[in-house]
Image (cartoon, rainbow, N blue to C red; front, side):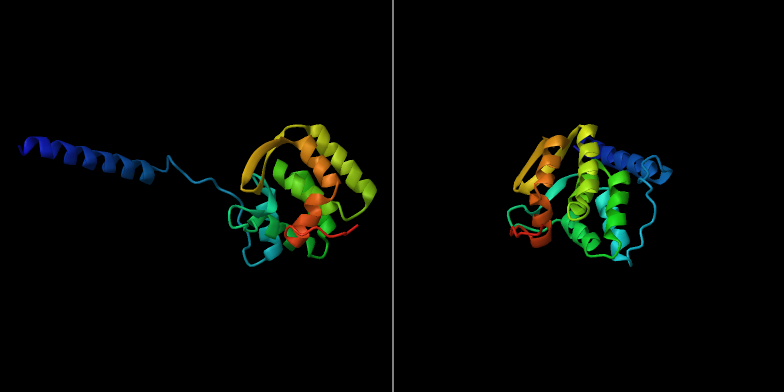
Length: 166
């Protein structure tokens, strides 16, 4: 009777020992990213947008929460020198980060925006978008077209309420 109780306990002890050794050995190491100055809101916002994995609307989920990416976009938009920051994001960001940058450039020089939109459209590919409770995968070409209409840029500014900006 005692024998078949000790086997599961010994197996659990063995498993925990192996897990502890693997964690201590460094075989499972966290990815190392450059340090971010969390005291600087603009640097933090840029880091959030550069690493964005999805392109999200201003209100997502059942509660309509404003996602971190949109809050970061607003920080960049309201910062001095936003054009340079958006240009840098356009060049160095993730696919979703580049879309956020394009949405920011929508307010600036129309020729520069058109050139950036054409370049991004030509890259092709797909991106995950989230609107409300609906997540989907769309072509970059289609999302760029939507940004060209100004709907995303206006939404980011006013949390879903459309206003005439241009």
